[in-house]
Image (cartoon, rainbow, N blue to C red; front, side, top):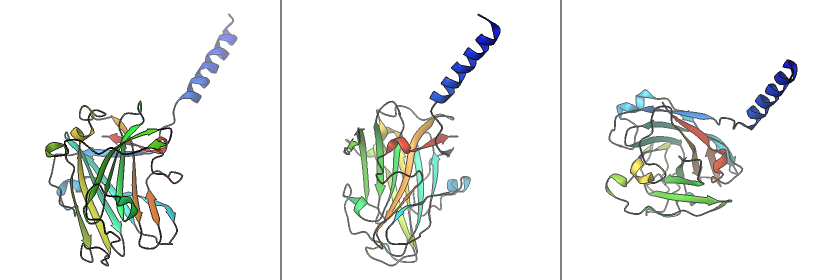
Length: 239
């Protein structure tokens, strides 16, 4: 086999392999922290070690433009999230956990740690501090959430919320609200069986929904409408 032919063959194989590689999605870096107490207002000192990530509007039928931003940290025991949501009114009436919180004002996180299986974790929290944690099997766009079993102790999400410029009450006028929560890895078993190490990557997305005027959604990585389009999620990189 002649030299030029071998070189052309190797170049062709290289180009084919490169074309077949999966392109990296947008990356959000999670910094390491020691565990700390959730307060709902983001005033714990570990939050000073990381920066805000803006979450931009995906769809707005009411024309409202509110600032939304998020911080993320991780420890040996779980993931920390802090949402800041500019707002005008607390459009929330549901006062129970595991309710249909997505029909009112809400912040949401989707975590897909293992890309070999179409199963991910969804967490929703309302301004009134009610939560919806579910595990979602997504089979060819057919998805339905499952409630966690033995949801207590060190398997339970720690969460708190606060409002700025008004009371934390249904239909109250405010300037903004914040949600702070800690998702333990133990809750994510068996799709997560150990603490992530530096350099590990999970797929993830961050969302917000507001109903002050019609319907507005925010997304870190844009989807075509359904938040469950997990192939479009970004990458959470553990620093």
